[in-house]
Image 1: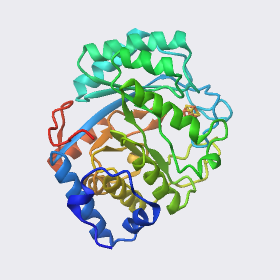
Image 2: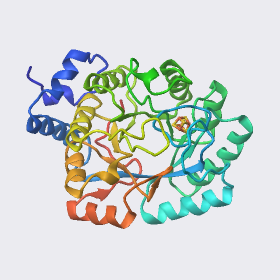
Image 3: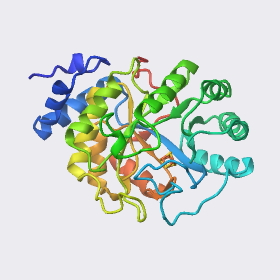
Length: 332
Ligand code: SF4
């Protein structure tokens, strides 16, 4: 099948599995050329969006996501803490801003937040916004009134990953369903916040599961504005401790296919970036990734050090994108 760059540069909700699968079967150079051409058409070349993620409540989560060291059900060595004080969050947000991040993400290990905690988190969001950073939060399942509260507080993005395909979901998590996840995503959309939603590869899923997850994301009425793609970081004590994640080549191909299927979404290189060499990261950026998590920790797992990231971007001639200046990124 011949893929047309102009047609593929427009967001589509009618991707079907067989068509999407053909992308993965393209010769590697053709796949990367196609993905890179779409990136150039829809975004400012050689620029990147940078987010810093802070874990505001770590561990003791009642859910059983098999990849996650924060579940109370697994015996892992993480430093647990209750919800941080506002003053801690202010300090970390200021640090992120002065290091060059343009978005500050607040992550809490909850099945879903309690309203009394949400009130404290709303104070954090208001502070992040007051220093002119974009703000994102990932707090688990939301009730309709909670999504509304967050939107009214000025939260720009809500992160809620689908993680994997609908069919594979119960092999990863048993304490909630894929549809629970979709319900929250719909509430986020209804509230007017932007959606950050992606997944993890290298968890023993098939290539078909990876493609199916992207097709399911593309079939959402509006594509998520932000799509984190993670490579499993296998943590001791979790059910997935013996897995090895996806190969570097498969990860790069996943980034490229994500770019093509979700042509105007920011595709974020997320967990697992620490394992990639500079050349492999450069290849991911060529393949369409245009966002990274910036800062030495990603919740509980390691991430490249900030000065290494800045040095790499410098070598590649890539500049940090200020919030919302990208006129070529036409809203869906
Ligand atoms: S991924 Fe989130 S919901 Fe799942 S166990 Fe970890 S903190 Fe809890």
